Length: 288
Ligand SMILES: C[S@@+](CC[C@H](N)C(=O)[O-])C[C@H]1O[C@@H](n2cnc3c(N)ncnc32)[C@H](O)[C@@H]1O
Image (cartoon, rainbow, N blue to C red; front, top):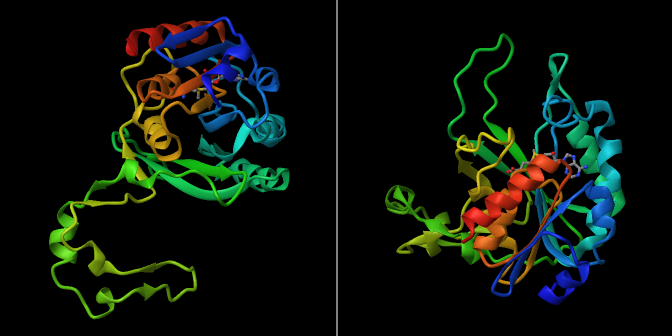
């Protein structure tokens, strides 16, 4: 979407940097999304409220009602997302009565019925998880990042997130077997094949779908902030300069800050006045 289209939305809290704009909308995302044009957003990255948890900070949704609550919102997201756009959903099912609840799995199935493709699942491995002891499980140090698309042919700029080859190159690529020197097609019929020898002498490789990032501990004014590296990584991977990034559950403004710093337009929606103000303040301070 061009910046012109964003101007049409005419919202009160428009923060402008050259031609890039950040809209920070106060309100319920279901209502606010209805005011956005069809196919107008290139990437949605968001972390919705957790089921039932954190009731003291903003109304939690019961795990049994989570899918029912979320589906009208994902329906609007499907409408506003551009055909080649991507939706990244940061979510993790909570434990209810000693078991992992299944609302995330149910949500995926229902979203597929709405027309979404469930393309991929990334894992956010939280590097700085606190130690702890529970009688029947270990500490939780990862969250899901589910990738949904409208069609199989979506925008993806893989070279933007390449990583250094690292020590792996020195060990694994040193002694190549005969299979390593030819394209080795997957024996399980996944369609994936690899020719390991192609990577000899290269400095950079494509990353895996596991993102190792520390949780954010510096932002004390909001209880559920994700690290800026998280939206930044997906913004680089799925958008280009001037594209539009949407976070319908903006919280402290992290996604908008990441988008703005990467010269993308952003739209953020936040229901709580206090967090809405905090987001505007953070965007202003961190994108000078
Ligand atoms: C998990 S937090 C997001 C935190 C954010 N990723 C950050 O880094 O600060 C979810 C946010 O969604 C907001 N929220 C809850 N229901 C909402 C709704 N219906 N519309 C818009 N925002 C909502 C909450 O107030 C909360 O700030």
